[in-house]
Picture 1 (tube, rainbow, N blue to C red):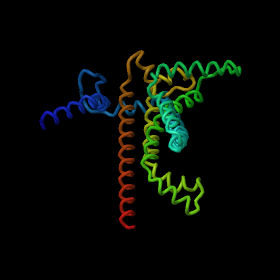
Picture 2 (cartoon, rainbow, N blue to C red):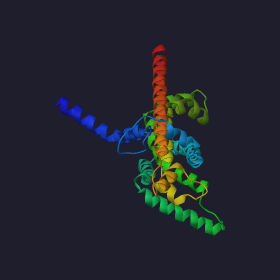
Picture 3 (cartoon, rainbow, N blue to C red):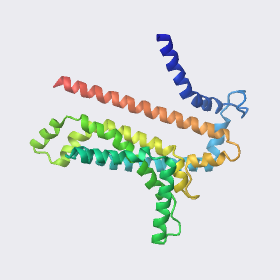
Picture 4 (spheres, rainbow, N blue to C red):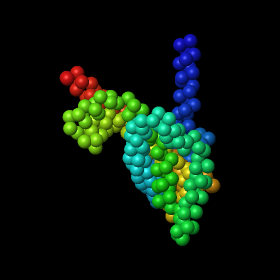
Length: 271
């Protein structure tokens, strides 16, 4: 049974990571052919940094992902705070269900509905050009919100309510109590929600396709236009750099989380 369980786990990880390994491997393939690997080269990375259109698309994606994830994290954290404080159980469950609907909604339905909304509002206000960066920012912030709430809300439930009451009894205002007591307790959930929002926004294609304009093209949209011809091997290099960056970010967050838990444990033992 042990062998079968290990074999099954290994097979699952192979299926998950085989495409990523193929992308990384062939980003160093000099032949520029997926049929065989010839020799090691960095030519595709050099070509990538000379491709101004690809770098501009990457810059747009990073700006959009960072901005939308920060806004979604702030709004989502406040929404989770409000849901956790709702006293009526049925009202609270209704709010949670409504917040989860966008996650279950197909991306194409969300994208089309948002496009119709933006075009309709643009027609009402008489705007010549409706779609662009701001519509993409609103759309990305909207579909990121449920994921932030999903990460932060359990942290509010796990938090010791006695600490909040003690802070209020000792003279802290509700605002001071939130920032000094509650915020540090829910910080792991906030960081998780921020990271999830960033990655979801960075690789979103379907919704972006419906609410974008030719003036503001993100990286997934740029890569999609490449598939109309032949995908450049510099795109493999770009994907490899993004994979490495995300892995380093995950390692940094995990290390920071472990260090925070150790400090909290030492502090608890000291008291």
